[in-house]
Image 1 (cartoon, rainbow, N blue to C red):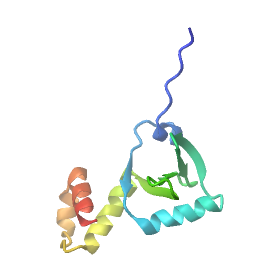
Image 2 (image 1 turned 120 degrees about the vertical axis):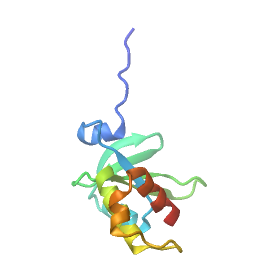
Image 3 (image 1 turned 60 degrees about the vertical axis):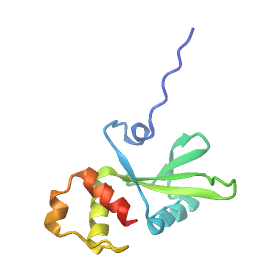
Image 4 (image 1 turned 60 degrees about the horizontal axis):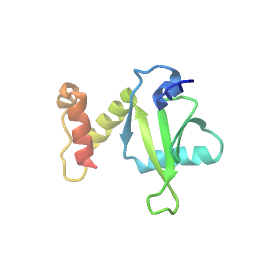
Length: 125
């Protein structure tokens, strides 16, 4: 009996480095830029996820996830940033403040653990 090899996870396919981690960020404008790049052939297919696809630009610092919308009409797209890029992006977004949440000081940002940073970014969304 032949055993099937386990399928590699998407981040392993991207660079062959299992320690690479991506974080989902809610940034419609950035996501739309990648959708536009995908439609013009500027992204490479990285992996398929059931009915969806993961695509990456040549920089390989982010992933665009495209899948059918839940209602069956259209396509849902989501942006995943490489861990360090995502943290930098979140710090910048938090410094701008928004949704009634005051921006943290630079000192507060520097002392935040990644989990705190992500939680505050999500609360701001």
